[in-house]
Length: 353
Image (cartoon, rainbow, N blue to C red; front, side, top):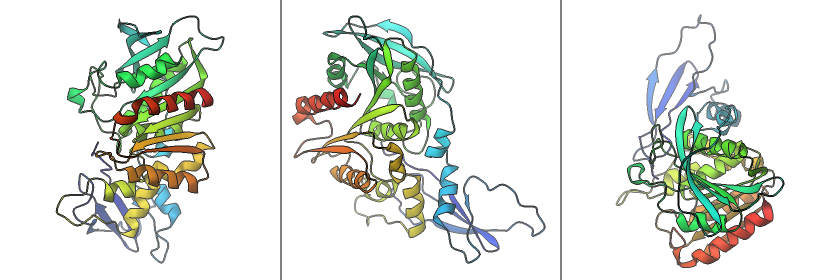
């Protein structure tokens, strides 16, 4: 959950370069570190900007457009993710599990970035509607990859949507369970988001699924993945985010579990602008009115409730459609209000898919 944004930002200023590097983990223990690097020879022909280079104006000003240019070259950026393709593959049944009350359960696999990714699929019993069942791409929160198991945790959550007539697919992100690849984290590496988008593409290939009625459910880290996926892929109609890590990156860098006994980390203006621009929160107009549901407890010890408030403010400022629920005293899993929360999400998807 805490692996975030291991990024470098290089600035071109006047006759030389100013390089900035960030500690491996946020929040920062120290501000960005400066070091001079010799400039290129004046006679050298202009070359393409390196991935982490921002050009200044003649007066040394760094414009918002320059920040956006370097952000767009980051693999985790929306621009980079939108430039990729997500073909997915046919869902391959690995084994059949005990059935639910009115639905089947199977462990399946699909392809993502050339990796074999496993997932838990549920499909309603009976003949599908003419155009297929609505489907929810189900994105779990952070679980230590070595402890993750396909059929453990989130059982009650997935069951609620399966009972209500939705196909659901919960991916084991790369490096989790038996999935191939390395567990790279959900915030500063695109891998998990790519797995989510390929999961959606794979669902669309299933004739039992209505590709025009596709939604996202995400918890904790899965909330961040769902938000980013929705901004990359316009086919998602709605998303329900529970206790999501959905505050802007500059807020995550300074307010998420700050180091005990040390001053609260701060960002200078340049770092704040860069992290804000890198965050999906800077591009919420890309939702184009597609609805978002937010649910979180105020006693959440893993993700501060303030993150939901900050995200709601960002959605409001972007004039986007959302509904937010607050559960006083409840925890990260909404254990005290689980039935109510699940009922609200089921109703939300029935209305919007």
